[in-house]
Each structure stands twice: as C-alpha cells, then as structure tokens.
Image 1: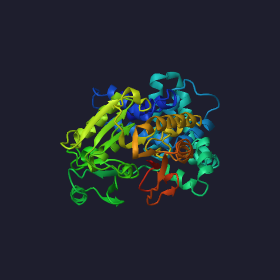
Image 2 (image 1 turned 135 degrees about the vertical axis):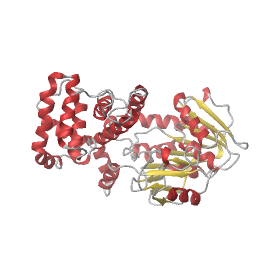
Image 3 (image 1 turned 180 degrees about the horizontal axis):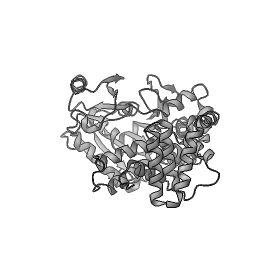
Image 4 (image 1 turned 120 degrees about the vertical axis):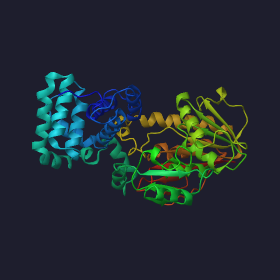
Length: 444
C-alpha cells in the first residue's frame, strides 16, 4: 500500500513524537510542519492543507487523552517500545480506536502500514498492540477509571496541586480543561458595532451567544477566513477571560502605556481599539513581534493620527537596554507562566511542563515585576496577568511583591464568576472562559 507523505495519520504521529520525544510545543511543531508542507501535492482528493488540518485534530485529540492512551499502551506492551518513534504511531492509532473516529479496520490497517513503511520489522508488533487493544478494550477501560492519570488525563503533580488549591471544585476545573475550548470573538469598535456584527453572523449562518457585555461565542468554531469581515479587521479571536485585560488596565487616551511580553498582540490591539495611546509593545522575540504587527495592520490600528505605537524586541526585565526613562502611566505585564488555565487550547502543555518549572517561572515573574515597577509613575497602575491557576504564580507572587514594596497596593477587581480577594481575581475555567489571574497594582 502506497501512503503519501501527507497522510493525516503519518503527520499526526510525527507531531506527537515532536512533542513527547523532542520537547517541542505542538504549536511550534505545527508551524514547522506547515512550513515543510507548503508544496506537497493533493492526495486522495484532499489538499496538503486539508490533510494538515486533519493531522492537527488527531494530534490535539491524542494530547487531550494522553493520560488514558499512555496507560493503555503501558498495559499492552511488556517492554520499552523500540524504536521510540513507534510511540507516536501507536498513540494516534489507539486514539482513533478509543474515540471511534473511523472504522476500526481502517485505523488498525493504516496504523500498521504507516509504521511498517519506516520500520518494516515493527509490522507484527504494531498489529499485535492494536488488535490486542480491540480484544481487551472493556477490561482496559475499567482499569483506566481507577488510575488517576488515565482517568483525568493530567499528570499526577498537576492533579495534586489542583486538589490542594481547589479542594471543593478541582474536578470541575479538570473536566473544563479537558473540553474543547470555545471560539470567542472580540469586536473592533473602530470598524463595527456589536449589534451590526451579530447581524452579520446571523446572515452568514453562524449561531452564537453573548458572553458578558461584548464577547461573542460561536456555537460551532469555524476557520477565521469564514468570519464576516475578519480580513477587514472587524473582529478578532480572543478568549473571554483574556478580553478582560485591556479594560482592567484602566487606560485612557493620551496615556503612555507599556505592554510588556506583548506577542502575539491580542491585548495590544485591544488596548488600541478602546483608547488612543502612546503605546510601547515589547517582546523578547522579534519573530513574534511580526505577528503583532500583522494584527495591528489587519485591524487598522497601525497608523492612527492620535496614537503612537512602537514595537520593540528586547528583554522586559532589562529596561536599560530599551527604556527612554520616560515613566509610564500604565503597564500591562502578561507574565510568562505554566499556562495551566489554558491547557484545553494547548493540551500538550500538560505533558511538557514539570513540577520544577513552577520555581523557574516564579523567579522570572518576580524578576519582571521588580524591573518594571520603577518605570511606572506615582499614581500609575500595573496590571499583573497570567493564564495560570496556580497560587505560586498568582496571589503568592503578588503577596511577595507587596511585602517588598511599600509604595504598592492592590486595587479591588470585581469579575463576575471569579474568585476575588485582596490579592487579585482568579477566573476559573468554565463554559465561556479559560483560567486567568489579574491583579491591579497602584503605585502610591
């Protein structure tokens, strides 16, 4: 059987291996695969891009269910798998069988054939694993329900931390993080209005619902090219919780604002949609700033007569390299974190992150807070934001910062449905939103 290089099952196996064996994120692996596949021919009536999309869905499915699938694989094999690259092929095949994504014979036969193309001696082994799973499926399913990692599809250290910090509702949080994320839209008020855009969605056959006062959630996600006016800048895709950052910063026209760690630019563009600002968007990765510029161009925000926008590639924690010594009225610090609140969008993160990563990230968050605080004028405000659920990155980080700075206090933040306290507001993942933390610091 001849299997083309763009077979979705083969591409998905390559993606899974890039994450589990090489440590690349799924986002980076997909970008590399797209770059390498731009000139591939159409296969079986489907273009390379369609096969890549199918492979992406398979790979995301594997990582959403990786705890369960890896448990199955461990029960079905008596020794370490060799060559290790067979892991990706077997996990994709088991996911197809377990989720019923295609006829069982097709999942088994093509998994075997794809693996055997590169590893001919593995044909019998892969075939045995796949067919053994079919025979033992009921038994394995019952066993998986008694195994925490397999049942919840989270690493043990992650489950333990959630159980410790959210004893009353950790199961709801885990269940929410295992669902498919909603596709949420942010209206660009410089281009359209909420009511006008809702009418456009209705006319184009995209059922949706309102979240909060301005966010729109599609009942069925679609490619952005199918959204009315997307190319013209009428709308952006941004999670409901993330849309709260720009309003919470409390920036008004003519203010000098720093958006530290700005890429890919969702919060940057939102700030410019609601106020004419003297804005500096900073990121350590120059390549990621290209994405920020593209967003600004598409939304019609790159050149505004009453606003100033500068994109700078540098380390936010080293102001001497880029700061002009003019204080800022507002600073948005969207700090690097474990991204524990958004793993339904990046399910590979559950398996890439380690417990010890928390300490490194907490040190980086503290470094950025310390470096940026002197840049804020007295009476100015800094919004500290993460997409994390863990206290070490959120409330504990703010408590430690306040202990070091007598010229800082936390302004109250009230967010519907969030857990609000003296150190900030924690948004819990749910139907409409991912998990975020916000603390607004006032410099006295």
